Structures are given as C-alpha cells and as structure tokens.
Length: 340
Ligand SMILES: NC(=O)c1ccc[n+]([C@@H]2O[C@H](COP(=O)([O-])OP(=O)(O)OC[C@H]3O[C@@H](n4cnc5c(N)ncnc54)[C@H](O)[C@@H]3O)[C@@H](O)[C@H]2O)c1
Image (cartoon, rainbow, N blue to C red; front, side, top):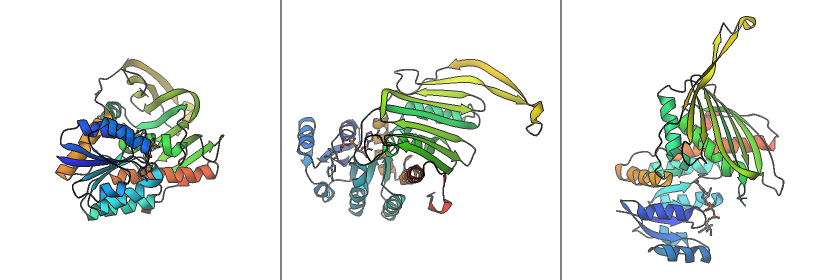
C-alpha cells in the first residue's frame, strides 16, 4: 500500500482524492489545503489527516507519494520540496511556470530515482488512446492537421491566461499523438477583462509537416470541445462532449493525380467513403492515471506523461506566450532546450 498525500483541495483536488481513495494499492493518508473551507470539505468526505500546511505532509516519513493540485505558481516549490524529501510526485498541469523549473524537477527526480508524473488527463482518456492507436496502425495516414476548438464561459483563472489553462490540454494531446518535435509557434490573443488573455488562437508547426491550430476562449456563450484531425487516409472528428461516439472516423479525403511540378495538370479526386464510430474505453481517465502513477512507482518505470512531457508542454506554452506578446510573431523552438 502506497500512502499518498494530496496538496490542494479546491476544484480539481477532490477528483484526485476520490480516485486515490478508491484505487487499489494505495491509501489516501493526508490532504493539505491553506483554505479552512476546503479543509472542512475534505474532513467531511475523507478519513484522512487534514492539514493546513503542506510542509507537515512532506515532513511525514510515512507518506510515500504527493499529488499537487494547487495553482500553477505553487507547483515548483511544492514538487521540489517533495522530491527533496524522497517522495514520488504527481503534479497537475501545467507542470511549472517555466521550462527551467521543469528541468530542475526532472533532474531532481532522476537523481533520487523517484517517479515524477504530470497530470495530462486527456492522455488517459479512451478517446485519445484510440486516436493514437489509429495513427500507429496507419489508419489515419500522415497527420496533416490537428484543429481544435476548446471554448466555454469561464472559469477565469487568476494566475494563468487561457493558453496555460485550456490550450495546455491540446498541447499534451499533441505531445502524446505526434512523434515529432514542434518547430515554431505563433499565437494571437486578447484580454478583454483584465491583464490575462481570455481568448487566443495558436498555430504550431511540427517537424513532420503537421500543423496544429488551437482556438481557446473563456468568453464563449457555449461550451465546445471539438477537434478535427485530418490525415492523408482518414479524417477524425473528436467531440469530447458527446456522451457516446466521441470519435467519428471518416473515410474521406482527396487523392491527387498528377505531379506537384506540373500544377496545371494537377487533378484532385474526392473520396467520400464510410463513417464509423469506434468503441472506446469509458473508464474514468483520472482513475486510469492514478493507477498508472502507482504502477510506475511500484515497477520503477517511466510514466506516459513523465516530467519530460511536462517540460515539452511548458516549452510550447512559453513560446506561445512569447509570440502572444509579439502579436503572432513566430517563435522558433531551440533544440538545445528540449528534453529527450
Ligand atoms: N487535469 C485537469 O483536467 C485539471 C482540471 C482543473 C484544474 N487542473 C489543475 O489543477 C490545479 C488546481 O486547479 P483548481 O482549479 O483546483 O484550483 P482551485 O483554486 O479551485 O484550488 C486550488 C486549491 O489549492 C489551495 N492552495 C493554494 N495554494 C496553496 C498552498 N500554498 N498550500 C496549500 N493549499 C494551497 C487553495 O486553497 C485551493 O483550495 C491547477 O494546476 C489546474 O491547472 C487540472
């Protein structure tokens, strides 16, 4: 049994606490939150020690692993202290505020042989797993584009803009789906109600030729979670809000006849074949993820969403933010700053 402590019991922490309490192979030993109201909710729901200072949890030699569900600005300090104390760490997205901090955590975990995992929840959904499976099997062909709309009304965050809150999910999905590095990113956005951008459009160019376009917005009248993935062989519509049939695969596309050099001869024939909705696992992603974290600790294997993937996502966020400040000026990725 792995004794687990959770820091942060606001909106997301209770989900981690529920899954940890239910998962085999661990016990929910303690919850820490600076807010008295959050602690009162935790006391009602869980039979665990409830603390006001996360440092007391980290000082407890009986706790082997820490999950961090506090705001992004606090992740680095808490995660580093936990690793220093010899605890395994599952940290919420975004892993840290800077790639330099992410690298420090990765090195610290490696030095101490500890598991460091980032909660990129979508990677553990049946839908995203299925898309990856279809790409691996060659069903999709070359991935031409990933075009996502992730908009709704709120929740306005106080410490991060909409890119760090919503686009982070797509960046994590892209990091999992594509086996290639981003080359450049361009981002535009606007903050209508304060200093932080509440809407943004991001374009990412990948080495393999894939282009990703992300549209994120906290100020939309309706909630949309729709992604189009265009491949040379099939196209996918992924609608995360559908209760069933979240993924639809279309045998549609164009076949080009003639050579690119002789453009005037180029003929395009349209293919309009079948559409089907593959079976996907309906198991709760967060439960799959918590079980994976425990398994990685036990077997000393690298998590699917390791510190490395957390770092790559933070790098994309950093460069997108830089471009945002320059009204869409493309920012190139520097190979030296990438982790393997
Ligand atoms: N994986 C997902 O799908 C997902 C979804 C939502 C949020 N998140 C992530 O979870 C994290 C928390 O987000 P949230 O929406 O739950 O925020 P929140 O503000 O609702 O909750 C944060 C909690 O942390 C507590 N806290 C803050 N600083 C603290 C400190 N220094 N010590 C102890 N407690 C402290 C607050 O009192 C609060 O109860 C963020 O990183 C966010 O990006 C992830």
